[in-house]
Length: 297
Ligand SMILES: Cc1cc2nc3c(=O)[nH]c(=O)nc-3n(C[C@H](O)[C@H](O)[C@H](O)COP(=O)(O)O)c2cc1C
Image (cartoon, rainbow, N blue to C red):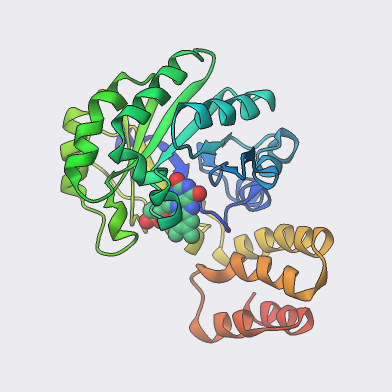
């Protein structure tokens, strides 16, 4: 699948609202081919580590699935509290989000906004050094407003004890517009002392000759074609994954609208013929939804 020996590591990107513990397990059990699944970020809200996020990182919910919990923090104190909560659950591997472009997080100085605050990144670096029992990684963008911000942060990133740095080569202010900038990725790889993982706009697994890479992280491409790392028939994969997500949604959630919100998220990015997808996404009752899914699969 990956003929370049430098790119042996494949990660499933965190996608808030899509890759929850149930989805990650469904993918792992039905397809696999992924070395690590990253959780959507765990955050502090109203002074507390969000309970909902900690349910998603619950070791029981993730048992047997190679999972990396991710945190988003504004500085050393928040980072320490998030690490305490995750280490308390037993985790010894934590990823730091320095790339989220959502304006609310950026304005608060988190995600790609953190790249504009080297002093706070340094606090986080010190906090990492206090926890030698944990393997850390960083997932970052090129900068919030300019590539210069990300490059200026690289000495601090280099001083962090990291297993790798995942770089999504866009600016935070671009959100998801434009194309991921592979030349900018190469400029960061030149100055980064850690192994690098490439992330951004990968639709099929490619041969990454020429770039020194530990591997690749796949997000929307894998949501669209969750079968792409295996050799099973796409419909068979969708049927198997959907039945796991469906069983969970219809037993753990209440009422058609909550269930349908979770189930529609399963299909939102999936590569399906237009008419089949429209029928699924338009269904407003579980009965209609079941009929549309049966027709598609
Ligand atoms: C809906 C959505 C939710 C996301 N949530 C997260 C998140 O919680 N943490 C994170 O690091 N990145 C998050 N991302 C970014 C993705 O992990 C990934 O970096 C981005 O989609 C680019 O990779 P891709 O082109 O392979 O999808 C999110 C992206 C989308 C579209």
